[in-house]
Amino acid sequence: MKRAFVTGVTGQDGAYLTRHLLDKGYRVFGGHRRTSTQNFWRLAQLGVEGHDNFSFIEHDLTDLGSNIRALTLAEPDEVYNLAGQSFVAVSFKEPTLTAQISAVGALQLLEAVRIVNPAIRVYQASSAEMFGKVQGMPQTEATPFYPRSPYGVAKLFGHWSAVNYRESYGIFASSGILFNHESPLRGAEFVTRKISLGAARIRLGLQDCLMLGNLDAKRDWGFAGEFVDGMWRMLQADEPDTFILATGVATTVREFATQCFAAADITLNWSGSGDDEVGRCSETGRPLVQVDPAFRRPSEVDLLLGSPARATQRLGWRPTTTVAQLSRMMVEADLVREDQGRRRAS
Ligand SMILES: C[C@H]1O[C@H](OP(=O)(O)OP(=O)(O)OC[C@H]2O[C@@H](n3cnc4c(=O)[nH]c(N)nc43)[C@H](O)[C@@H]2O)[C@@H](O)[C@@H](O)C1=O
Image (cartoon, rainbow, N blue to C red):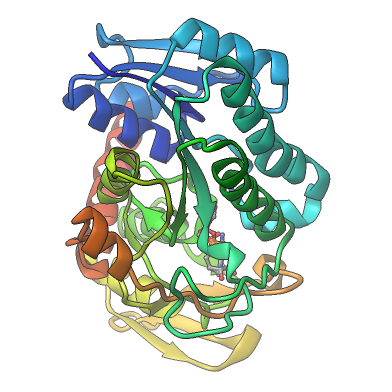
């Protein structure tokens, strides 16, 4: 039975990956940092919490001793580093914390692997945010990096640390440069889930209007449930390397909102521009989506579009969920959850 240690197990990717590994017969240890309110809803929803082959390990990525302790307890064949401060907007407000977790934390984990057992295979969660102000289209593993946020800068440090430990110590450390990947388990602060939740709540009469920032930003959005399989495949390859996981299709925030509202049976008509742009209900003319400049960022990543060609050729990884299917899946899940919440409240 293979053993895996997953950091950041309570997040969207941690939950999907752990489910994936359990389905493949792994014994999985999930690292989580104690907080005053527990955050296990994703693990409960996927049937991970309480599974015979799953255990939690209390763990702090930024603490070398904690990393060594976790690896000594779990004795893993594979480590997946998914822990981090993953919200780009917050990284502008908490840049040092972001760097401590996503940059230095990644290094501390690699260092612990080197000390405890250099034969452990490591997956480092890198990010398309490292491409930032993009230097090529579509972005490939050869595209130069140009991060535009403290988050992107921190992720770049983690990425190069993985490459460096591969080259310096022969550690099997693969870096997955993942483009945006979403699901019904996404946190509500990220734009896709904010929109799917807003569309569902407006449909159910629980909310009047949805406030967004930059509607022109384009992202390459895929389904997180498929991306975790790409992570796993990276650690089954003959050689460690850097791989992009993306769909190769980019969509604007505006178009994603249009699709989500359509999935909630509401047609949006857009008018105006800049901060005055409005998405109105085609039947009533009511403004349902408006712009709040507070949701704009000090520096924006306008467009991310990745090529998954290397992952397809070398790992056999191919995403199949379209952005239309993704938006529908997310809205349908939010309609059910919000309706259940409404019934419980009444
Ligand atoms: C690859 C990368 O992917 C994610 O980072 P992100 O792309 O920043 O994700 P997001 O959903 O916060 O923003 C997407 C776009 O949408 C724009 N946008 C407009 N209006 C709102 C708005 O109201 N809220 C938010 N959050 N964004 C908005 C926003 O300005 C940006 O252009 C993380 O998983 C990250 O961990 C990661 O690695």
